[in-house]
Image 1 (cartoon, rainbow, N blue to C red):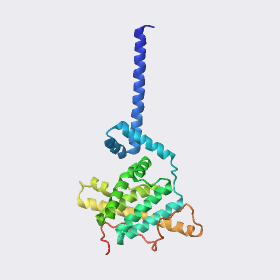
Image 2: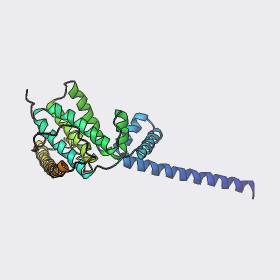
Image 3: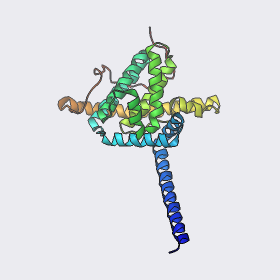
Image 4: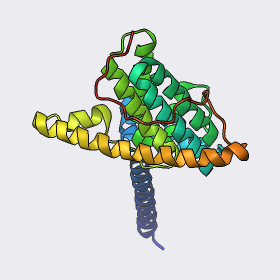
Amino acid sequence: MSAGTTVAIIVAVVVIAALIIGLMAAGRRRRLQQRFGPEYDRLVGERDSKRKAEAELTERERRVQDLDIRPLTESARAGYAYQWASLQEQFVDMPADAVAASQVLVAAVMNKRGYPTGDRDQVLADLSVEHSKTLDHYRTAEEISSSARVGTASTEDLRQAMIHYRALFRELLGEAADTNSGQDAGRQDAGRPAEDRRAQELAAQDELAAQDQAAHDAAGSNRVASDTQPDETWDPVADEPVSNGHSDIPVQRTPRS
């Protein structure tokens, strides 16, 4: 074999290897983009490097695989849904307290599912692996909660926080999250006539109210059974509410003094 032929073979092998590596990298990138969605773009912007961002996202996947992430039992799911319905009732008279309790409840569900909740940044990183679609909702809700603690959140801000917390809460429970609610939905509807936006908002509220009522009714039936045979997996985070009525979050309501 001549030297020229040997060089040609080596060059061909190098080119083929480079193509294979490039295809593998492209496939990995598509998979990460599909799995992490907006979180992929956000992290690329923060790290100013796709390679660094992809390495971090891959490490997140490895970490979450090692966690004992598990679904909720039916009775636990019903119990948490019951508590959420009670918090929505509480919002009418004490919106700030309801938002603070919602934050605690969402953290309790995370913990019950197997997510560590000690470090906020780590919580966000862990949630991004399986709950990337609702991660921005959670971030926004946490920001409003911080404002509420120093008294700078309006009643409308608090209502938005409840909506954002609910998006992740429902997904953690295994339900379809209302990912188009809250501020994102408001931006999407910005170009529509006010009457159309108002009609859509009312229709969305009616739908969410019906869904919450169904969850509330299911929780009530499960509570009858749990009174006689408690489920050890159910870990309440708040006292049992006195009332088991239902009302959805109002569009605007001024808290009582």
